[in-house]
Length: 222
Image (cartoon, rainbow, N blue to C red; front, side):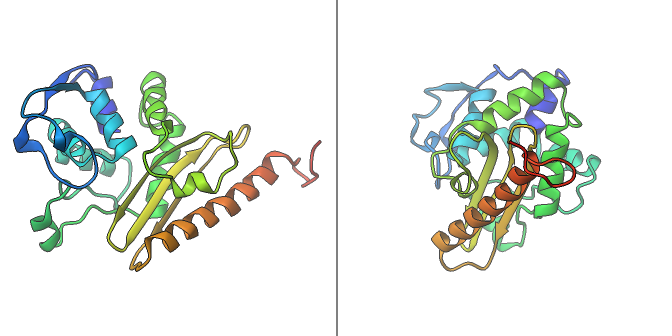
């Protein structure tokens, strides 16, 4: 979101290309860690695609460096999000040991997504550009997606760490879009956590689908 905000402000261009250097590469998820040293240059937009679709840690870190961690947090604060903070780069174990973790809450994530969908963060064209990326199919099955019927568009980003599984998104239900964020912690079974998120997603969809197909008096419409 900060990337698109800075593009909107003219501070950078989404088609600006960045050389991928070995010193920037980190392990974990993603493919950029396997690239040759400075053998490729990738646009900022495509780095964002890799970050969202593949959870590419190297792409994420490059974008953090491009937009500035302090700028990300300033924007979050400006939007009234007091508990959502970016405090470390990906695969920074020293920062983790020091207690610097990237934080949010389901309430603040849904607030952020509601502001985004409502055009309160970016202008119409940059909002559409970000939603387009968030709607791309993810490499790993999204727990939120698994709770939705086929054909329902979802703009989302999930995440995981040992013991933690999260997924947040905008469900683009016709006539009744809604935001949802589910986070699990202290888990010992990632598959169980994903099943729990999917079940919450399924039940929330059923609720909003009933609202979408009913009138103000609760009568189901044909």
